[in-house]
Figure: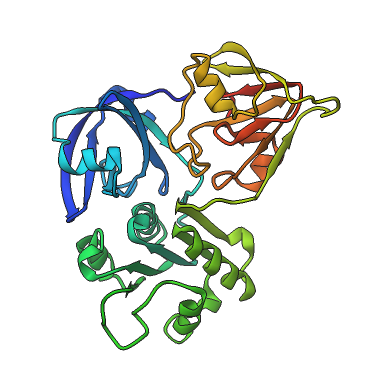
Length: 355
C-alpha cells in the first residue's frame, strides 16, 4: 500500500489570484517512486487546526519537465486550499503520497492521432500534463483543446498554454462565461450545444480520443454529445472535479449474499496486517476501518479519487457512487472503500492488492 513521504516544498508559483502551483523536492532515493504518468494526482496531507486534512491534486507538470508540480485552486471554506494559497511557504514539508489515478495518458511515438481535450477551471491541471505529453512524445499526433473559464484573468497556466499553442499541432480555444470576446463562439459554458457550435471550427470527425475534466454536468452533457456523434464510449475519458449526489449503485460480488441480516464481519488487509471488525449500521468500509484504528489511505471520501481503492476478495459490497473506477475494474472486484457498504455476512477487503 502506498504510504506518505515527507517532501520539502521546492517552489511555489502564483498562477492566478486564487491558484498556486507547488513543486516538491524529490530525494534521489524516492525518484523512481515519484515517476508519474500524465493525468495522475498526488494526495497531500497536513494537520490544520488540529485536523488531519488530506486532499488530492492533479500533477500539472509534463513527464519531461523535470519536476513534480501540482496546482491548488482556493475554494470557499476549503481548509487545505486556503492554507496552500495563503500560508504555505517554500522549504516547508508536506506529507505526500506517490502518484495515483486512472485518468491517465501513456504516449506512443508510433501513433498518429487527433486528441480532443476539454476542461473547465482547475480541470486544466491534469489536462495540461496530458497535452504536454502528447506534443512531446507523439510527433505525429495533434491536439485540440477547449478550455472554459469565467474570464481571461482566471485562466490557469495561460502563458504555458499560449506557448504550447505556438505549435501547429496544438489548436487552443478559450471559452469565457462572463466575458464578451467574439460575439458567440468563444462565449458561454461548455455544453452539448457549444460542441455543436464548434463543428465549424473543429473537425470532430477526425477525433480519436477525448479527455474531459471539470464539473459533473459538463462531463455528462459533453460525453453524451460525443457518443451521439459516434465516438466510442471507451474513447471518452473523464475525471470529475466536482460532483452532485447520485443514485448510481455499483455492486461488487465475490461470494453468495444469502442470509444477510445487515451485520457483517469485515476484515481489511493493510500493509500485510489483518484488522477484523463488525459493521452493523451500514457504515462504509473506510469509516469503519478508521474507527477501528486501521491506518488506511484516503483523500476525497466522495468517490472521485481512487486513493482508497480496495480489492474485494470475499463477500459482497455495494458502492453509493463511483466516479473513479472503470467498469472493468468493478467487474474484477475492485471498489472504493469510502463508498463500499457490506452486503454479505463476511467481507474481506485488501488495500494492498490494488494493481
